Length: 423
Image (cartoon, rainbow, N blue to C red; front, top):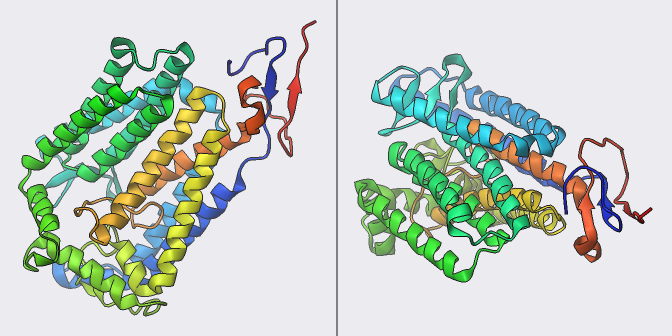
């Protein structure tokens, strides 16, 4: 079973066909919802910052910046849905090295107190690009890990060596460890670290890692996670606040955040207070435009609106699962699995922390939260999944099929399955 090249006698070739446009539809609707909510609360956010820090943000600043991020995200989606997946997989190691290099430069710049390293709330996670805004290198690293591990682990799947410790699992553990060191250890970003771990864990699960090895990996990851929590006082406070539940004091920062998120969602009722009428966005709910946007959407659009948004998320995740299930090349199957783990981790962690099911974790709600880097790279990952949806096959033909080289640019309205006889 090979990708590209000539098929062998008796093999079935999967040719390029029409992609899954539902991915574009659901992604576009979520982006539109995000733009609407930023338009609604942007002026309130600008007013809060201007009063608190003496800045001079206009009422339309956040809306226009989000619109620019959205356009760049669409460009990223278009590029990754057009550039051959073979080229992307082939350059997975370069993407990974570039991600590590970017994180290393940021760490050095932060240590040296250089202006290019942007510090916020005691953490250095962004490059300050001046008028161009900021760039979070952790997102580059996540994308590099996604592509490299999918290619590497997919090759091991073909060889039947997924559970080989030295040749397969040890390199993945090293890559994961270095990534976590940069993201959680140096950049102090636990939420992004969990998302990156989810990418790798999802790919290992789909690759067929044994239950014994999976349990060892899960236990090790849990121990490492507890270690990172115990070495950071603010993370301990969040866990303590979570365990106390409703009995925690509202004076605690973590409890204050979650309580006001619940107030926002509860205030929205069935249909919400309407666009521009949010009270929590006026300065009561921290990070209203970023990590807490789900709660603000609950206040604005109500229970019906939140269920609609969650329905769009679920629908998009289900399309990713469908594409993954109908791919035969292990590398491509793992790529889409990684995108599913990436996107799903962000949605679950953000929503669960806003309603108090999980401890509070700073992580964006994909395609909805204000910010450019996260949206751009998630859109790029979805663009890659969209491209791979051109190479799916009917489940009844999965065992006998192989792929046609993606460099073939025939436009086919539907899947064509042809069997070549030996000459």
